[in-house]
Length: 286
Ligand SMILES: *[C@@H]1O[C@H](CO)[C@@H](O)[C@H](O)[C@H]1NC(C)=O
Ligand SMILES: *[C@@H]1O[C@H](CO)[C@@H](O)[C@H](O)[C@H]1NC(C)=O
Ligand SMILES: *[C@@H]1O[C@H](CO)[C@@H](O)[C@H](O)[C@H]1NC(C)=O
Ligand SMILES: *[C@@H]1O[C@H](CO)[C@@H](O)[C@H](O)[C@H]1NC(C)=O
Ligand SMILES: *[C@@H]1O[C@H](CO)[C@@H](O)[C@H](O)[C@H]1NC(C)=O
Ligand SMILES: *[C@@H]1O[C@H](CO)[C@@H](O)[C@H](O)[C@H]1NC(C)=O
Ligand SMILES: *[C@@H]1O[C@H](CO)[C@@H](O)[C@H](O)[C@H]1NC(C)=O
Image 1: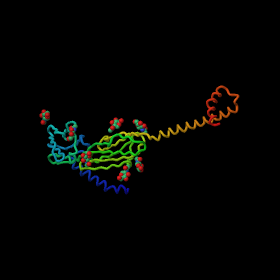
Image 2: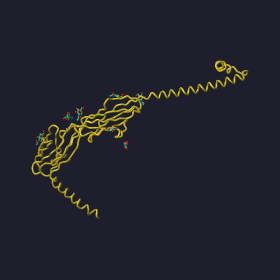
Image 3: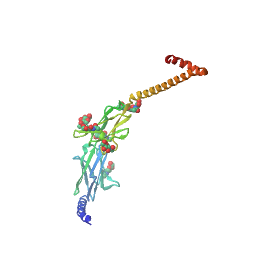
Image 4: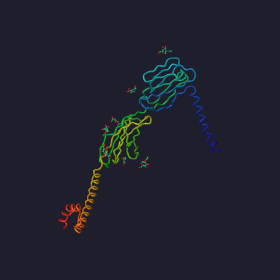
């Protein structure tokens, strides 16, 4: 109950706003009121006029770019065009700017002669620039610290820069991005440092909200495995071989010792082994 009572003033306020704007736009409506697009794309506004009207003009960035007569053909001029809404309904006009540029950012004004007056829409144009990882492919030794720098130029507004390693997003706390502007477009520099472990594709991406897919640049990080890996392997092989030799030597000594005790029973093979192995060891050991 209390909540309902508290919301009464709000409802009244909303109704006032709706009724007020409704009253004004009832005879003339310009849509959308505000739009943000990417440079080079096409942008469309529509004006819906109630009742009989004769002349409509469109102004972009203080230049009158198109005039529409309700009874006549609509002509296009350069990158501007207009047409009546589907079905040849002259109460509605679609105005299009083709290949929009940053210079056209600002107010788009539709004026209808007579008591209608003018309506203003706001156009915001964003710009996609370039992305480049400095230095190209890199080859380093394993576990070495590597640093990549990514430069973006000619963006508006400031682009969002991010990195991926072999397609995996990199935590933003691991790189630093700084931007600079000349008042027109933004350049930025992003520095990413990490320890080289695997062969990796390093990618830098930049985007603005209206860009469907980020612009990117990627390079290869080739990691040369540590030479210590080989010395460890060699050490293992050598020590294993050494151990095997030692065991053989001990077995040989035991064998020869036994032979000396039972000289008479020697078969041919044992005799041969005794000849080759024991004769030498006997010289050196006894
Ligand atoms: C409209 O344009 C066509 C062809 O361009 C022309 O034949 C016709 O007379 C025009 N109509 C008016 C009302 O200007
Ligand atoms: C769009 O406009 C730009 C600059 O005005 C121009 O360089 C480019 O050729 C135009 N593109 C098309 C498709 O008309
Ligand atoms: C990096 O390596 C890839 C694959 O070997 C190659 O296609 C590409 O051209 C190289 N890029 C540069 C800048 O050298
Ligand atoms: C990024 O790193 C910070 C600090 O190391 C951590 O608090 C945060 O949770 C990480 N974010 C993600 C998405 O992993
Ligand atoms: C980013 O820059 C700040 C200040 O220059 C520095 O303290 C920090 O370590 C840097 N972070 C990375 C990931 O380079
Ligand atoms: C952005 O980079 C371009 C090319 O390197 C350069 O010409 C321009 O002056 C730079 N703009 C800013 C604001 O640094
Ligand atoms: C990286 O790739 C190169 C050849 O492309 C290979 O010689 C090297 O062993 C690889 N490094 C790692 C750590 O796998």
